[in-house]
Image (tube, rainbow, N blue to C red; front, top):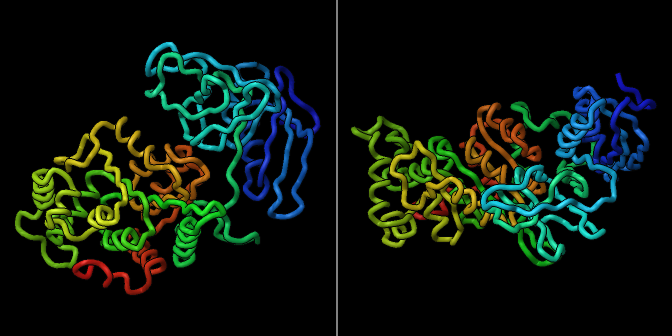
Length: 429
């Protein structure tokens, strides 16, 4: 069992951990990981912040019996904000094959990252997990580089020396001790949770010192329509509270089906018995939109006159529909190449400050993989397993909200758009 005053044998490295490491329990997590790896540690310095707003700073000597074990452990620790305490420049290697990276390339996290180049620290633009870090020819800038975008001659960081990451700040609404502060819970008061999300959206849509507004991204699964939440999403788009929408063929199809035929998978959203042959309704709307050539064309022709995607078209809100192998049709707007779909999503993330993921697993995880950890992320689903998957796959900033997405979306629209939001849209939607 490691102690606080005796480093273990073998290979050692001094690392730093900075930030709100006590109230977030990050330090406890880091020490647990060290012990579980069969390593030992010695805390060299511990500077504790004097107030809840002050950061703490910890220096730890980590020791392992084998050098390879130490390197692997330090990689695991870095995703929690642990950095080597060294002054070496980052090591670079050239890409020698399009679409493939050099051996030992540094694999990024979604945390804010810096690389040391020519004796100075350079921030990496647009943090994203599971990428490489590409350095400009003159060494003045660095950016994340997805593997498929690598080209011969690109210079990328290899190894972990000369790389630092920083954990995002706390997003808690108060500084006091409180119950119900876990990232996922089905017992949290939903009214307070809705107001927290609404407050984050309002904050993003308030101009900062530079006069610019942040963007709000919404990710929607088909259950948004099935639960009757699509009109609430439409109201949020119409009210200017959503600037980007990501979804798949399922959400888009059922949103259009409900707007045109009043059904979702053939079931009337207003109640009553399913219509005869209603199971084919979604195929019929897909076919019709394919005849028009695009969702925007169907709106322009007056065939599609309501719904979330209608509001996106009318408000000029960009949407990316990422396809899957199980899609019917699909709609002509669906990007069926998954790599191209991910690139299209990347192209819409500039300026996003808040992401709200509604009843979506695959598209939520895909989006989380692209988002920096600095983006406030809320994942809403009735199934607790869904809202934990996002954090389990690296998006540790995500707050899970276990509730019915229909009720949540209606309350969120009421908070942001006012209690009469249901009567504000076309045809009373």
